[in-house]
Length: 189
Image (spheres, one colour):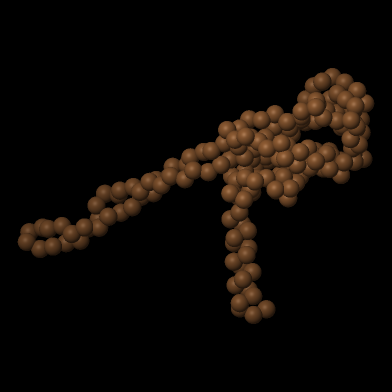
């Protein structure tokens, strides 16, 4: 490899490390035997709950439904339309909220002073510069309920600082968010 290739590789690695990764939290009922499940359905005709300052497009809702369904099927579960035939009911919550981050950093200031007839240079006490950054925090939560008991058995939530492009919730972005959120959900054996 030549020096340009190595430098390009280092730049790509650094930029990919700077990209915002979702924070994922999951919780589950440790008493639940997930191997007993084989089918799932939506909790209702409208499985999405919205907790957001933004209006969530029905297109985004459908993308999330398609992604959740595909991810659960990939884990070996069968989707059924009839709630009475399902072992599990699935719902999801989407939210986005604008947040503000204020940071202060010390900024030393040099100035000239005078003492006994001659000039000296010194440092003043530290001053602070303040910067404000407004950003959007997106959240996706997926809940799985035991159909027979109507009790929650698994909860997964992921949150991420959204870029302008991610706010459009493209199919690829939604698929990635659902995949990360459901990553630790048990696979059917």
